[in-house]
Length: 148
Image 1 (cartoon, rainbow, N blue to C red):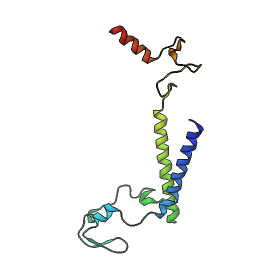
Image 2 (cartoon, helix red, strand yellow):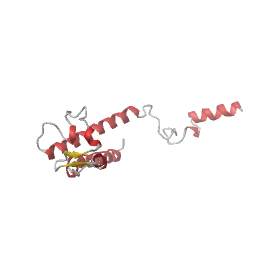
Image 3 (cartoon, rainbow, N blue to C red):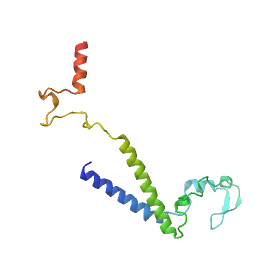
């Protein structure tokens, strides 16, 4: 990969880490559209606990992974909510980056041919410039001509 590509990738990763680690702490703590629509018909107190009425949110259950180390946008065991939220965001970015990089690594071209499909010689010309080599496209054209 070119140095310029590495710089772009590193810059994007740095921005994502900054957003996840710092800016995520300033996101709204009010319920999003789904949460607020599920609370329609219920009365809630200041701590968002349902105290009356009838709404779909009353049938909500705890998630199976609710006790996991990164549940509820934080890291279990860290009491400072700013650090806990920031750290969980940074860990999420790093895990996502690692999975994506691993997927690209597995899918990369391994045969060493150019990605645009045009083969070149060491002199910079194409193989059809008289150096005796052929490409798969040349072979396909010859077979098509011979068949007709």
